[in-house]
Image (cartoon, rainbow, N blue to C red; front, side, top):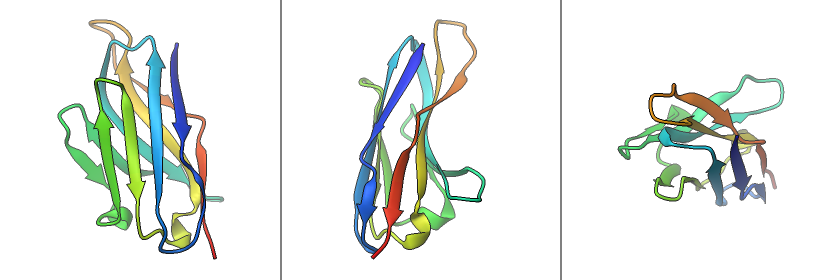
Length: 121
């Protein structure tokens, strides 16, 4: 079993900041990447940002320059610092971890339960 526990969502005014955290625990042998996706009402889930075990980040164009992803692979934690938030950032944010359970195992995508981020005045 692999568990992902997210925290840090909430309500913030436009221009404000929030920091999301996600901690992975359980039967994890190795993690290749961690990241964040989001899903707004009536829309498909989309990539926000990911970071590899080699510390290489990837960002959606819509968040470049505003969001920063970071990680602690020793503790299996990923963070998303969100600055200059806009109403269109409102969504449920999901943590994603690609991990293997033992040496030689395939990498599998695991998902958190989601945390709501609402940007509104």
